[in-house]
Length: 274
Image (tube, rainbow, N blue to C red; front, side):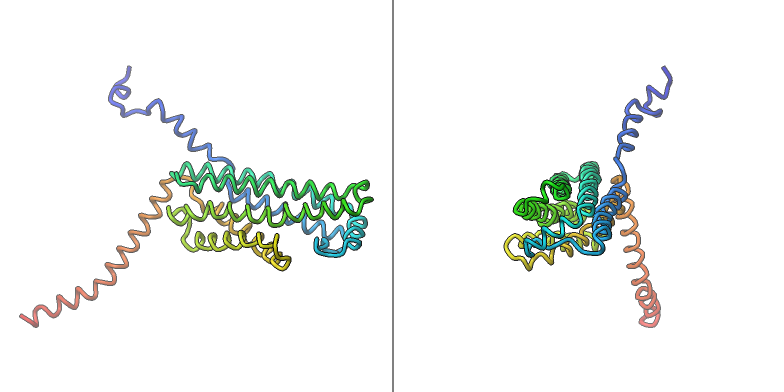
């Protein structure tokens, strides 16, 4: 047996497993956020293009007009629903990855669990919305106007307030430990808390039709925030310590620079007073 193994100066038996654990951080959250945002936007854009520029009808509109629109554009409904369902997959992976990273960064508060719960709920509601939308493209369904109206309400409920409120829960779960533990820039974390509150307020859509304006506002701002947080969330605690050390060094340097003229003036007045 070598001297290094007795003295402990050589690589220990747990060093390789530790390196493997550090490497098992999952896919980059920022990339996942870009993917599910791109898929979601593609569903909206392609659905509108395939419908000859006509937007999806409001669930608060006239039943005859809604049924006529779905009958005229089944291909647009099918593509939009399929892409929304596809977008739910990277969203679920994003939630699981960020939750695991927060645990690895030492977050023991409920924030990491809230991230996972909110992300899975948001993903599940979006998947349901996509599947219901795909169902609305089937010819047998379109022959039953009451069923079309009921399914559109279901698609709106799951893809609207259901998805957006859960998305706000995901944002809050990241923003709170990001602010308290210094994992994210302060401005970004505070912005996340504001957006999460806005997303939760979109639940008022279930009581007031006019509150539906909060849905696109909260949805798209939260998606942009999740992309930024995914790229800025550190992978290791060492990165947090390095950032705090740099901030402390800069603060000390600024204080030294600010007090230097005062010290120099005090030294210059000392001989005169003597």
